[in-house]
Length: 344
Ligand code: SF4
Image (cartoon, rainbow, N blue to C red; front, side):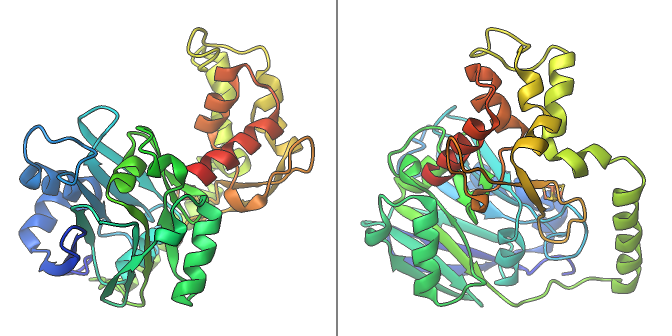
């Protein structure tokens, strides 16, 4: 099947078993990938009325047919489970390099079920799956977790998604942190990882996705990349990242302010795109195969030391940690963002 690796990995943490299932063409055509796959698995397999933080919940990591190709903007991994925040279908997604790496292990979908007796992490590499002890990682923040895991698997090219103490302590909006800076936020899927005693999922692979008409796709990708960078449609995203949203949100009266009591903030000019670029921006990053490079690299020394490793706050973090708190200090916003990434 073009566009797919054709395999689903199922991990039962209670039974400490793994199995491989085929991804059939009917499922691929009907549900395509990502949220389609996740929703299908949960709809079919979750019993009605389960507690989202019980071992009955399932966590589904899914990619789509474009992941692993050079199609710009396609490097996304979707994670779904019943949400502990809403009790409804919970979904999140993140970019970076984990999605491509996950697919390169040979699996389009990873279904994680049950609950480990003790903290564990999954090490998935070249079709091999190991459930490894993570008791020594429990309680550690994301950076320490990732550093230790990369030492243990002895492969610096492996990609790590993990939780920090927020997920371990079942905070109902805890996030999943990928490579320290790409975050699967909203709806508490980090808490679902914590409820399963699952500290991290680590992937490394070399498999390539099959492409039907590779030459034509290459030509299309070149044209797309050229247009994205040159036709002006992404100009402000390239220059300011998602900080391009702050000033327009203020002007149109939709900037979340003072714990949602107001919709505009008098300090916006200190935290809008231009101010953030001037005060804390030191570089740009990208996700796999994307020419836009909207991800921000930020750094500061005072009044808080902010490391460039965590990625700059996106618009949502600027609003949540800035205007919602009546905070107009870009460095304080960046530091709070760093701590959120560390603690998940
Ligand atoms: S760099 Fe920005 S625009 Fe490109 S895929 Fe990543 S998040 Fe999307």
